[in-house]
Length: 263
Image 1 (cartoon, rainbow, N blue to C red):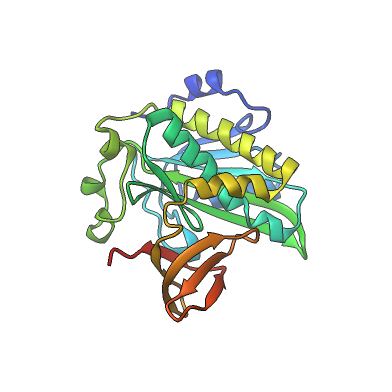
Image 2: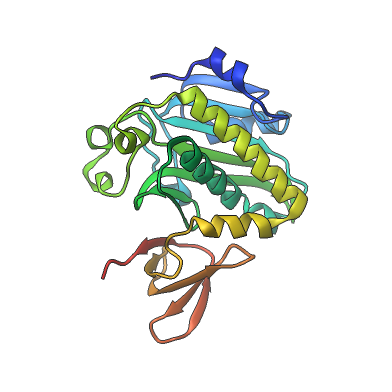
């Protein structure tokens, strides 16, 4: 089931997001094209969406597999905040996605620090935010969102990812209307983004935590330099994960990947 462009444009109810949208069958990376458009004066809310990406990526330059049937898009933002605040837009995006997937499909959705959305413990959406700054001044932020929608993970993903990922089709046993999903995501993203700009990070973080099923559980946190085990206590106002280590000390972590320990 492909994205129906005409139906999407007719149904979109936003102030800015998606009013200028570039639709492509294939692109190397929606984030890269969105950054290029932003550098050439694209207005806030400009969106790039593609049926597939040939060089999609996640955090730390990891490959993001983008088979046809998924929803891959990037939004140009120009927030009037300092760079230290703009990094928190990943929480804005993941909260928006979590709310939409729960509201539209009744799924048991979780947020996972810092940038994933899960259904029953498996990744259904990844988010990548990239920014251009001058000192602490933010010039642009591009928020990229990839949703595993209308495909079977068992058929299209390589073996190591099959146990870690899921799709809407796998969870619902049916395909979804991509224009309905896309419209809902843009509308909710604009809503949560405007709240973030208007009220700050606090209200967004409070609601994000309500979806954070890993909090209060024993987790493993891995980065390029270390592997830590402990109890996930909180995500604080700086977006850092607070982890109670096995020796009782508490550490704040800004970069890493979280997985819940089953034993």
